[in-house]
Image (cartoon, rainbow, N blue to C red):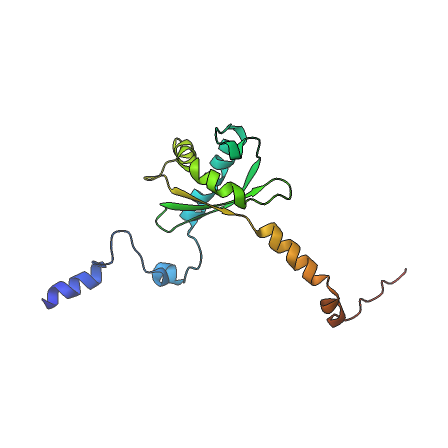
Length: 159
């Protein structure tokens, strides 16, 4: 019995196939996505952008709509992809999310034709709020409350 426990602790048995202790990878603790997750996410982003640019959907909510895929985030098992989309112009994306969910199986099959992964991930669509957040921060930085806390700007030297 002791022999089995020692053997399993040395071989890493019981942790599952392909699992690694993140703290033991090259002596560094990894935060964030792995290189493979980033590579697959970028591949999906490129493929989805191409499909969305050239495809006419039969869904009435998506006719004539131009979408941008801002970012794709993968789950660690590469079976789920969260796709952050934005609409060109200053138009909210939230009403389009149900339509994107309806055409999700078509998009999944379209991107899966050239992928070299074991599984084609399920696509989960979210609105890209980065531009809204940047606008909010910019407005906050230029507000009078923040401006009064800043020291006066030095005058440029005239040479």
